[in-house]
Amino acid sequence: KAGVTQTPRYLIKTRGQQVTLSCSPISGHRSVSWYQQTPGQGLQFLFEYFSETQRNKGNFPGRFSGRQFSNSRSEMNVSTLELGDSALYLCATRGGGGDEQYFGPGTRLTVT
Amino acid sequence: GQQLNQSPQSMFIQEGEDVSMNCTSSSIFNTWLWYKQDPGEGPVLLIALYKAGELTSNGRLTAQFGITRKDSFLNISASIPSDVGIYFCAGQLRGGSNYKLTFGKGTLLTVNP
Image (cartoon, rainbow over all chains, first blue to last red; front, side):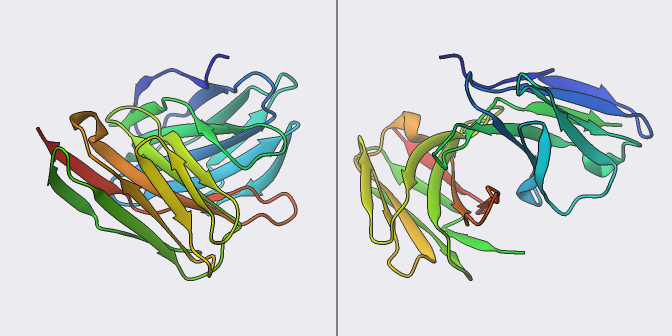
């Protein structure tokens, strides 16, 4: 079974721009969660989607948004980028019944 | 929000030694997960724990879910160079549709061959 894939792997953007990141879950997994990882704050939960609905949201500003499609693929969008948004963005997917979340390789976003 | 205290922050050991790291929380969790992350990659799930007191092994790794449900530890026996990486604990409190993971800050493990 193929793992979680994320595209792109690396991205460089300028302050004020917006960015869209993509996550394709493990086949059959319907839950997709997004996390931000920085050296200072560690891994922090952004939001979770299940069956195209956002079920849970972390403490991030409204500039961070996401969506999920009918095939369970998910995208997250960050608008009006700030320098502090530079981070590794990870998505994790979960199958039915279990609590284990499986992570993708992440997208390294650098904001200049 | 909930905080997980993971210790130690870093460890430098000799190949062949055993390693122990732990996480404590101010509140209870239903599930504890342990991950390992290599540079530039996403965390890889090592062990999942679901019941208080549960002891689970995965090869040279052993993890336990504390009986108070507020702590967990991970042991690595007979360490080898490829054990190098950052180890994270994560707790999950299931309630309704809540599947948010709360992570510790990680333990950086260095193994000297």
